[in-house]
Image (cartoon, rainbow, N blue to C red; front, side, top):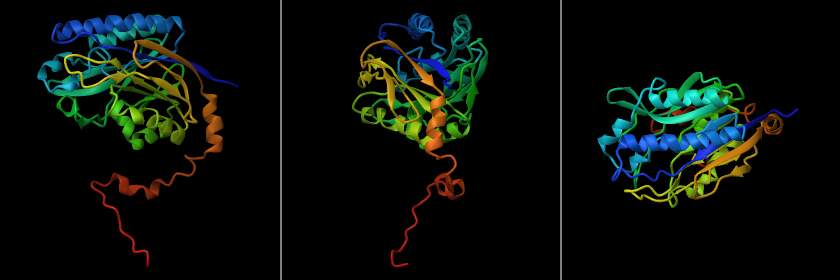
Length: 301
């Protein structure tokens, strides 16, 4: 018997440059823009919706400027998450809402709040792996590494997990999300052509296969002035536990991507590929040691 869940991803271009608009105005315009697309997702009867990384602004990590600390807000008590809680309740739609979180003065995280379909705040995931990659991904200037662990959240429709952007390069957390019961893992991202596009349709389907769950991968679109570090190439998608991409958005336009995910497919896949049964966690200790070196073995031995 099928267990269908209709899920949605929103990819958006931020066309407002801080050269011409205040940070507050940009955030307001991005929230208003998303509200229209959230309404569109609701008309398509979306049950779980995920927004892109740092959804209510540009990808400001293209520069290292303290002015962007103005975008921080507490989670869940900040205005953006509270506004999304009202929309979640209005549309009976669970939501993943990525924002720039302020825990206290000078302590900031790249965070995704998870809201259930009744508007209840379920918890948050803080991005664990923080890149400092040229050109233009200077995230260590802005974010403290996450300390939430790899939580999963039981929404009305499914148990979901969240990974954020650069996290997707690390299979360890993806596995823990599966061990913690994730049926769908959402990865809101901001990544440009020429840097990661060759990995975009490789790594996350591999996580889906290795862990037997669905993945929803989101990327923003377009070029963002004044930095122009590259083109955010969109191509948001859903893939199934077999690693097959079953729905994908365009490369260059704002879009709501909706797909029906049959969670019963997880059982069928896991009955064939017994990866959880055949794990050997007692043999994996080396991967958690700091600067673990490879052990050389003499073939003659």
